[in-house]
Every structure is written in structure tokens, then in C-alpha cells.
Length: 240
Image (tube, rainbow, N blue to C red; front, side, top):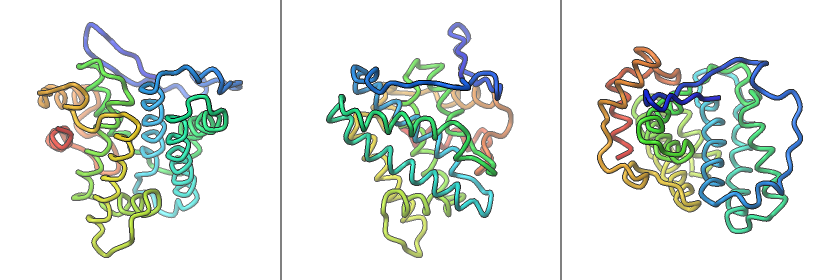
């Protein structure tokens, strides 16, 4: 869970395994029928982000985890397209609920060093500009991935090929960028922003965002590539 300090414009995560998650839950997809399209889309983006935070890892020999992530992402993409057109499609809603469980019950990250930089980058946007978390993620995750094409491209390219069907090529950066483009097109298709401007933030205070991020999370953030403050600023700029 995440706790927001409205007065201090802070949004920080709280982790307590075994305490803050239900042991047993019964979920009824029919209760989500009246969820507005934007909130549905934001939930979809957050599910995808929770999976990708675990997928983008430097841990080797995690093929089963990779395939679990990829399969769940593909299911989300398919069912998202359906549910945005047919909000009372029981099967699509049910499958999205199941995807949401898989996305954040730890299964996708077994044995992996997880990243979480994109979530932390986004938390600052939500805290300072009061935007919906999923909408902030649809802006910041593609920007983070774009920055990674210059610094640790291999898994980004694999993601592009396996999730978005990009043709394999020796030019891994080109493959990765095409995958990122398809991700952004998907977000746009379900009504989500992919830039600060589309998020309603014309002139984001990048220095303030980065200063707050590294004050809250330390000198280095994330694991896929550990981000220093200048790196975080560059990623925020890529989201303009």
C-alpha cells in the first residue's frame, strides 16, 4: 500500500509482507461493471506496471518468471481491449481481476531482483500534482524504458518481441523502441496519457520531482539500472 501526506506533498510506499494482504478474498467481477472507463484504464496500467517492475531484472535464468509475466501482460492487453468496449463483459472483467492478483501476489517476481524505479518516479508526480497513479505510470513507464534503451537494452528488446510482436533484429535498440511505441499506442487506445502535457501538467518542475524522489528514496533508485538524480531528471524529461 501507499500512504499520502497531503500537507507535505509526499507519497510513500509501505511494505509489511503477511500483514497488509488478505489471506483469502472473494471477488465479484459484476461489482466492477460501473467503474468509469478512465479508472478501469488506470487499473490496467497499474497491473501492467506491477508486472514490468518484476520483469525488468538483471537476474539470470528466470525463463519461467519471464513467461508468466509475458503471458499475463498479453492477457491484460486482450481483455483490456474487450472491457473498454464492453464494460459489462463478465469474462473480461473476471480475467482482469485474476491478472491483477497475479500481477502483485509475488509470483511474477520469484527469484528475481525487482526494479520499482518507475513506481517511485511516479509517486512523486502523484504527490506533487495530484494525478491518478495509473495515469502517471502510463506516462513515466515508457519514458523509463526509453532511457533504458541506451543503458540496458536487452530485456526491453525481449519484451518488445515477446509481448508486442516486434520482429527480431540485430538492432536491439530499434526493436526496443518499436515495442515502446506499441505500448504507448495501447495506452492511448484505452484513454490514458503518455506525456506530462496529456496528463495535464504543462510545465513540470523536474528539479523538484527529482529532489523529492532522491530525498525519499536515497542516492540511487531502482535495480535494473540504479538511477542517480541526473538519470531521474533525464527520464522525467523524456516524458515531456
